[in-house]
Length: 80
Image 1 (spheres, rainbow, N blue to C red):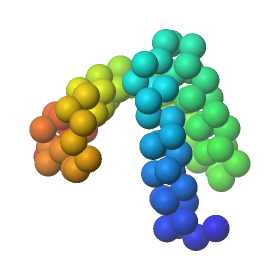
Image 2: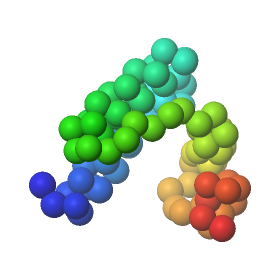
Image 3: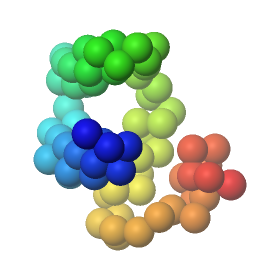
Image 4: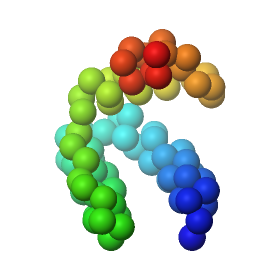
């Protein structure tokens, strides 16, 4: 699978998983992270850890129901 195809696959996975993650409990967050890290390990990538600040920033942005880039409005994770 090409690099671009992986990006597309991650995008659609995020669209499917996003509603569950936003309404998640710690158990669901841990399950999602464990699954993601299992896939990363198959490709020699180091595991990720849950970042509550990033999750809160993402939830804040998504709650506005606007499908566009943040332009840096969500803080350090927004790209500015």
